[in-house]
Amino acid sequence: MNPLYERQRAVTVRPARPDDAEAVRAIRNHAVEHSTALWTLTPLSAAEGAAWLAAHLERGSAFVAEAAGEVAGFAVFGPWRQFDGYRHTVEDSVYVREDRQGLGIGSALLGTVVAAAREAGHHVVVAGIEAGNTASIRLHERFGFRHAGTVPEVGTKFGRWLDLTLMHLRLS
Ligand SMILES: CC(C)(COP(=O)(O)OP(=O)(O)OC[C@H]1O[C@@H](n2cnc3c(N)ncnc32)[C@H](O)[C@@H]1OP(=O)(O)O)[C@@H](O)C(=O)NCCC(=O)NCCS
Image 1: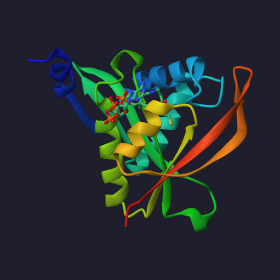
Image 2: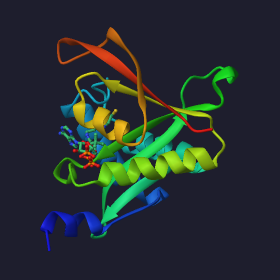
Image 3: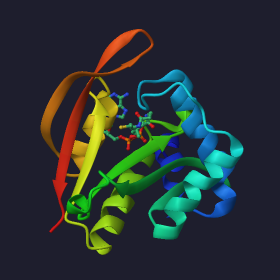
Image 4: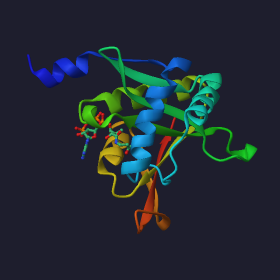
């Protein structure tokens, strides 16, 4: 059997637990330090990582992909913007450990998040993606997200301007 298929098959997506906080933080901090997926250079401390996950756990909006007893990725959804008029819209985030990317784990996570957001009664899911992040754009297209526009040069990291591509999925 194809070894890549074997590795993908062995992945389970489940709701996150408090004891996933350190593994999730490590994946998130790696993206902070090495990529333009998150537009900050400030990693989360252990306490901040636990608090960040706890807020999602309360809402039931955090999931992890587990492979061979290890967390290989995570996904969350949360409020897109703060004013109450935005309350039926959520934003998703999906992160896969670098050595596990391209194996279908992001797809498994995003599928779970979209289903959970729909079940929770939300109307729209938005993704804000750095315009050059072809993997994330392709991933979201796979789940029916449509391009809603690109806002040029609204961010900066590693000494260059970043464009934000917004993608949109209507759930109901
Ligand atoms: C974006 C990310 C979550 C995708 O997860 P993944 O497990 O690698 O994705 P999958 O293997 O499920 O592939 C999903 C789709 O993206 C495509 N894809 C994956 N990696 C790709 C790459 N490097 N370049 C182009 N397309 C890519 C796959 O081919 C697949 O499309 P297909 O169905 O047309 O074949 C993952 O690469 C990642 O964690 N990146 C770093 C963090 C990040 O950018 N998060 C998103 C922030 S908005």
